[in-house]
Amino acid sequence: MNYRKHIFEYIFIGVYFAFLIYFFQYLSFSPYSAYIFSASLPAFYLLWSLLHHYFEERLNLNIFLEYLSISLFIFIILTTASNL
Image 1 (tube, one colour):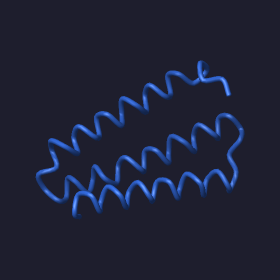
Image 2: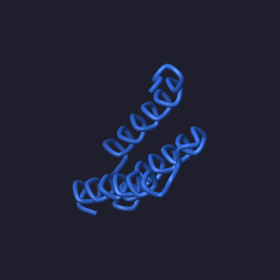
Image 3: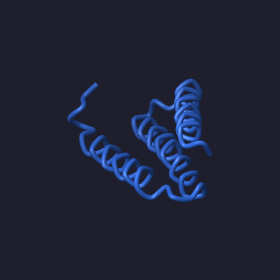
Image 4: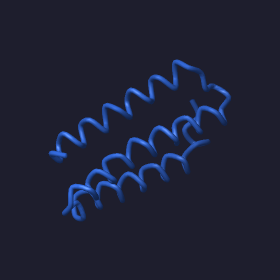
């Protein structure tokens, strides 16, 4: 895999995750906002990964189920860790 070809995608997703983690840590004073941040991170990860594989013309059911399960796992960990 050519990582240099996708460097801007990886930087973008890294910066987005950093902002979400910041907001989750410092702005999660209400359960509703913490829930929104907890749902936003895996939803964005799922969307980004599906679009990435779609544009690479490698998207199939196995890849979709893999990223869906990872996103659900991330969501469960974040909601459990924040006691939502």
